Length: 219
Image 1 (cartoon, rainbow, N blue to C red):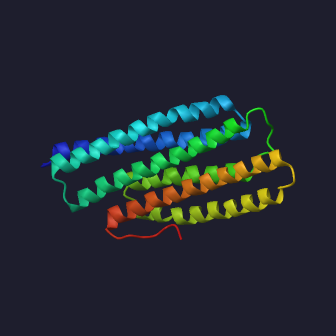
Image 2: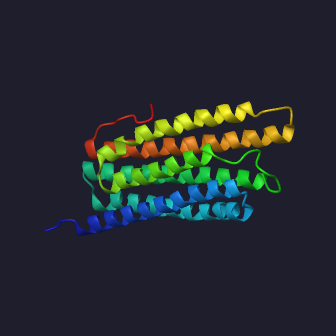
Image 3: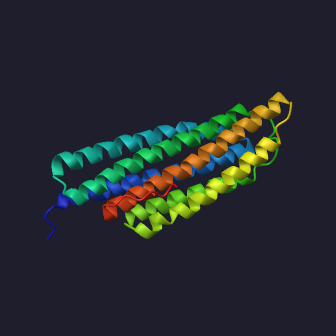
């Protein structure tokens, strides 16, 4: 018989909120990069507007975590689960901020044409979104191996980031407007590289939650 039904019900609710937040952030990253590729200002504005929803998720998860700690007297292993959830929510909120950053660049490009079609940047976004999805699954399934596998995908994002930097820097010229756009595209690539880093943070949190040991996945 479960001696702490209230605790486990609250923990289930916490994990559901975290999963919903993660799915919303995945969509936000996808939509931000899609808005840039299509120079869709309306879609970019929607990304910015949706960021308020992500902030609401973070507030709700903060409150659930504090309530669990204050009222349910969690054990050490429980505290790792709660602390990891709070850290994941913080990383998700920062990922959403990067989606907003990309959307704002789309708006800056309003009325322009891209210097060149986006090729590598969408590849970075695809891997970063896949990483985010995997990191959240590793949390809900307590899967240390799935969490550890994020390191290899992060390396792929880093390599693509280097490719983008070399490519865009090579396109620089004496044209100010061209260089301005290329510089902002470099920022986009950097934001996606940071998204990948935040997902490895999530993976590290999962490994610590399950094993009690810390492992650096972003080396």
